[in-house]
Image (cartoon, rainbow, N blue to C red; front, side):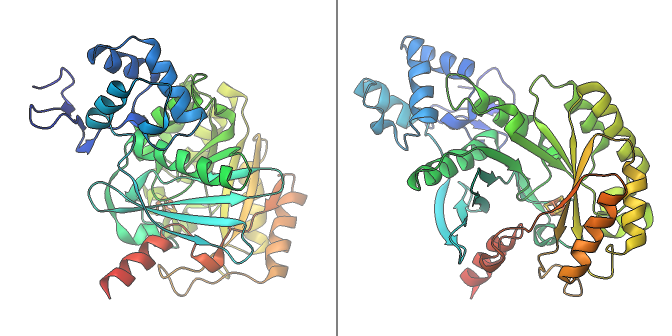
Amino acid sequence: MTTGDPTTTQTETNPLRVRRGVPETFYDLTLDELTGRIDELGHPAYRAKQLYHWAYHQLASTYDDMTVLPKNLRGELANHLPLTHLQPVTEQESDDGETLKLLFQTHDGNHIETVLMFYPDRVTVCVSCQIGCAVGCSFCATGMMGLTRNLSAGEMVGQVVAAARRARDFDRQLTNIVMMGMGEPFQNYESTMKMARIINDPEGMKFGARRITVSTSGLVPFIDRLAEDPIQVKLAISLHAPNNHLRDTLVPLNRRWKVEELVDACRRYVDRTGRRISFEYCLIKGVNDSDETARELARLLKGLLCHVNVIPLNPTPAEPSYERPSEARIQRFAQVVNDSGIPTSVRYSRGVDIAAACGQLRVEHESASAN
Ligand code: SF4
């Protein structure tokens, strides 16, 4: 049997549907889609809402935990629609216990990373949207890998749910999601936004869209598209340099969309949405950390509703010559941008001791497996 959706296949011998090469799971479905699936199985529509509640509110990890549902429905779903295919592989905790890095294996044997960060006032999960990344930023371990494939919405939702469960183990509640793990979210726009819609659903996790931040290295057409999207997630731009000469070397995508085009798109986005943009700025010793570069950055962003996050480099194997600036230089850079009228803070990437720079845990795990 083949379904009407040309991107989805299902055979008589295999009841699992496959979408763009990834077997479909419960976490891939919006509530409307799930209601349709429940109807196909001959069960009343209200069961879909019960399932959403148990999966996303109670954070049940198996259908058997959803004891309010009839046993035959639980059995049918386990056969036709697994909750997830993600398998936990390993977990690392930072020395201070405030960062957990989770590594999962996908159905096709790849590995993806999710980082859970505990702060006094919030709990943030950093989610991956691709296996590897095609953008190839020169300071990034993930960029070294190239792109294997996009993750499905369900594979992203699965990371969020797993992180919410781990937060609950510590009597904490997940409060923020940042799409800043492996991959470029705007090269996987549909699935990323579907993930946001699923976890935003009031029958499920009810996760506020404004607490989800999508980060891009600068795919200009998708900034305009996001401005029109009904789901109002926050936007972060991985800028890292205020001019084309420097940004071409750090973020190769800049050769396609120049700094001026990128900032123009940001101005259109703010005009259209009224939402503030965060600019991420990875600070690298002797590369983009001078006072003059700080002033140039402030001039570039002048008049834009925005905030700059200066992130001192986490050295990675991607470019051994790149180093973290001294603490004095980090503070000075942030001060110059701030004094020039752009609100700026320094954000230290979490879990340096557990390889929390994006892509590093996967790199370490795969090297260890190969030895
Ligand atoms: S920094 Fe982000 S966009 Fe750049 S290569 Fe790494 S994962 Fe891709």
